[in-house]
Image 1 (cartoon, rainbow, N blue to C red):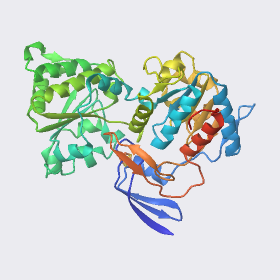
Image 2: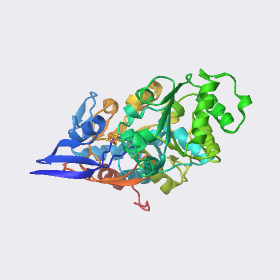
Image 3: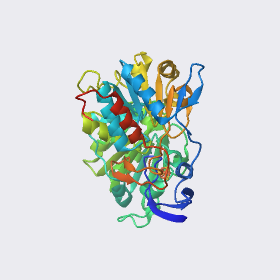
Image 4: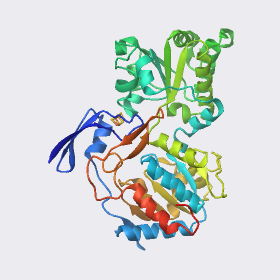
Length: 432
Ligand code: SF4
């Protein structure tokens, strides 16, 4: 049987493109229209974990039944004193909600990939607030787009064609011709190459350059020297002039700000600059969130505990990044078991963290094999959200979208597996 599904949503990056047309033949996706290469490769399918597995005494992962893997996972978690439940960025809000509940029952730390990505953004927003807008508003209104420390051409390939660049908007009927792009980065990226202006700054100097722009925007030109971290005052004056004279400016930023020297202070300064500009024109700021539902985890965990990541070991929610985030715990070798859902810390954490992660029991729940599979003791494969099972996700601008099931699958969802683990580790009186 052959069918075409329109308005399918891509569950890859934080752009959550919702305009795809997917062709399904005999319960297999055979063609995807409008997706970028990243999204299409996920939808067309690639190597999966075939079966649940448990590592045997010889160190080999051995295929087992789902029941055996869930039993083993539950035993590991029940015996742990300091469990870490990490990941969550590439699964549904419903599964994330189960993860937070499991954390409460176990007294675990529940942390997402945001702690190695836009966690500093959250800290900045907690201090300064977030003067932001939906991507729809930006598409329809923004005549100046600043990309700072991010490269959407590579990381969010359809962002510019759908929201921030080329499409005509309600108030910008000539699309790209109505907009100016400016990229600020430490190197000439693909995004910089198609921008109208590129300011190349020295590595780690974002805070200083942002502060100089703040001074110029606020009329304190005399405070700015002739050259600021590789950028001439003349260029900064021109950029500040563009910012002040635009009708609607949109500032997008990525890990060039969150993961460089200064971290959350960079975001704090960018938010302050946006607030300053709002005394003179309309300006908004939006983090380019990475995974398709990392924003959703922050929402879900905040609804349930009051915090976007949480330590539940004290019987009450506790939040202090720098002390209780996944890498803080792992670096100090405090974790004695971990459950990794929909992420790959073995590939993306520092060596010292991965070494400590690997030496303690590790359970992986994921549709795909990755570096974390190599150090996992229990592996439980699941259905792909947005392809084989439905679920809710939040786009980078906080818009919630319902991802659909496009094909049938024999794999259980993350939510179903977590539900079974919750039942096994619950004691009388636990709310589940
Ligand atoms: S830009 Fe992101 S959400 Fe859109 S199709 Fe590509 S990977 Fe998917």
